[in-house]
Image 1: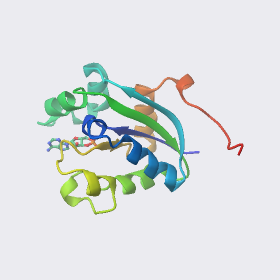
Image 2: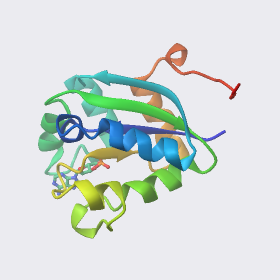
Image 3: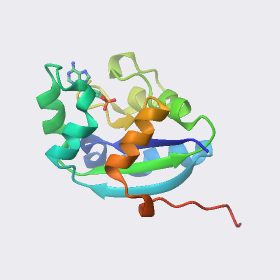
Length: 143
Ligand code: CMP
């Protein structure tokens, strides 16, 4: 079953959006297999955002993601990577449609509330940065 890495960024945590965001993915029918609140180290942030290393905003990006706790999650389900990205909305909140997470809650590109993996390769890499294998739960519904 496909998995993705989703992360409520420091702005989302500080604006008390964790519950709302978790609810959206639960209500959609995806299964939460791992979750934790953590403060990202600069080393983890630089690894996570390695593809943006040469961009002029890289320093700002690392400063922001390490500025306060994030809520890191792994979700599982059919096509969860692409569906989660649809639910998040466009990266730039000015292009994110109402009804999406960024469309409803974000106004700035640098503080766009949530991160989500964009491919199976990114998902595997990002899950590996933030979670140990034993922190992920494989379970079948029993009720
Ligand atoms: P995310 O999906 O977490 O991946 C990279 C992030 O870089 C992106 O969300 C935006 O928050 C951020 N970003 C992209 N472009 C810019 C920019 N021009 N200035 C500041 N931040 C940016």
